[in-house]
Image (cartoon, rainbow over all chains, first blue to last red; front, side):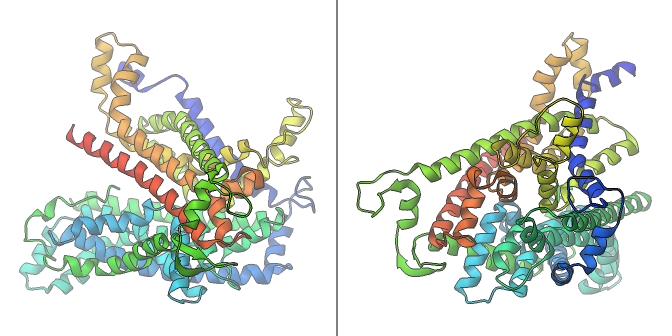
Amino acid sequence: MAKKLDLRRFPGFLPLTFLCLFLLYAPLIIVMVYSFNDSNSITNWGGLSLRWYVEVFTGVESEKFKSAAINSISIAIMAAIISTSIATLAATAMLKAGNFRGKSVGFALINLPLMVPEIVTAVATLIFFSAIGFTTGYLTILVAHIVFCIPFAYLPIAARMQGIEDVYEQAAMDLYATRFQTFRLILLPLMTPGIISGFLLAFIISLDDFIITNFVKGAGIETLPTAIFGSVKQGIKPNIMAISTLLLLVSVVFVTLSYLVGRMGQNKKVTTD
Amino acid sequence: MAGGLPKSSESNTSTYAGLGALLMLPSWVMIGFFLVLPVGLMLVYSFLTKEFRGGVIWEFSLAAYDQFFFDRGLFGDDPPVIEWTYIKIFWRSIWQAGLATFFCLIIGFPTAWFIATRTGANKSIWLFLITIPYWVNLLIRTISMKFLIRDNGPLNEWLLSLGIISDPIHMINTNFAVQLGLFYSYLPFMVLPIYASVERYNFAFSEAAADLYASRLTTLRHIILPFVKPGIIAGCILVFVPSLGAFLAPDLLGGAKNFMIGSLIEEQFKGNAGNWPFGAAVSMILLSMVLVVLTFYARQQSKGGVR
């Protein structure tokens, strides 16, 4: 046994892992710490304070950030709901509907938003909207977000659906349930953890997007990332660090939720098997 | 997490047999109409005539590609010579993306190996720690890096106070800063696919090699690396492709001197250049490069599948 463990170990891998985690977290932790800095300059440490958080909510830029946050959150909720619904139907088709024409092309199409570089998607979407005379603004951002959220919502949903055997649905059909009833009463409840997980990931992806939003948003509308980017162009101010910390915490909370929900689903699967 | 093709639906007894196309319809419509069609339109736009301050005139022209490859002097009537400006920007982007991929591999492989060889709950906690930064807003991560490495930022202050350096190191707006930003942005992308590969590795192979007196390094080189190669290639592509078209790291950390493809494209649409056909042409060139890389990847994958 000792020998087996030994073969798994390579000298230097543990320090490199710690280095990896350190590199990933150090900048984030430093910004979080400095967001509590009670000093006008971002360089000097002046003790702990919440003044920059107060500034975010009541300061000069607070109106801008507030409307940007409302746009960001409402777009993220709608984009997540719509892309999750689309992805759920697509996963049902890919995994539960046997073979049909265009299946492999369909699978490639769902993953397409992951393969095209974001900036290319941004350019193409902007050109398309301007060519068909669609005024850029709230709606263009929403449509673009729905499209690139589909593959992110699809992944956990399909992963979950792969673990659900056909027997439950077969049983329902044997008892004369219609296919719609089977879908609604059997498949959807079993799918819930995957769907929630997909929804949360799509929400985060939409909330975080900068490049595509920046291209398709047009004048006069901002989301949180574009508003933050605009401010940072004039230099990093302490209130930017406070708002970054808030957004960072939102991401961490949502990903943790998604992870826990996904694990809950797995545990359940083990017990029903 | 594979989400790949199904195993159980080969037969036609599947619950929703016959409904496949209908269920797929919403995703086909959304992605087809708002991504495939736009990319096609972008190709068309790259062959149109530019209108000043954005937009196009519907008149066929090769001007965008000509501008990319040839320099015809100030008035456009000199004999064409090769224009190096944009080729240099592409070359810098490829170089930076390649370097970022290399550094991510150096740190990412040992990390992935270490995590995959943990047991039980430990493993998922380590994995979770690596995934969190991936989901944190890229803009915020880039801003954090910018803050950290400023001339009078925390990193320089710390090094100064430790006496390691006597003057602040100038890092911001250098190639090094862009490199650091790319490496930092895409490091988790390297760890996750390699981790998935190492997970499937059977340590009986290592034991067999050890029984035959193979040293640890020999085992790593001849047994482990060939086995996890698909994961390494996937990780490299996941780092290289987004690095190539990155916008935030070069823009926020690199400044005007360290232009990459992403900034070049952005300037045609959002900046002062305002040349849509040229921006579309540069995007098409970037997209074709990415397609070449992905085709190479698909080839590798199908070869691995046969084995």
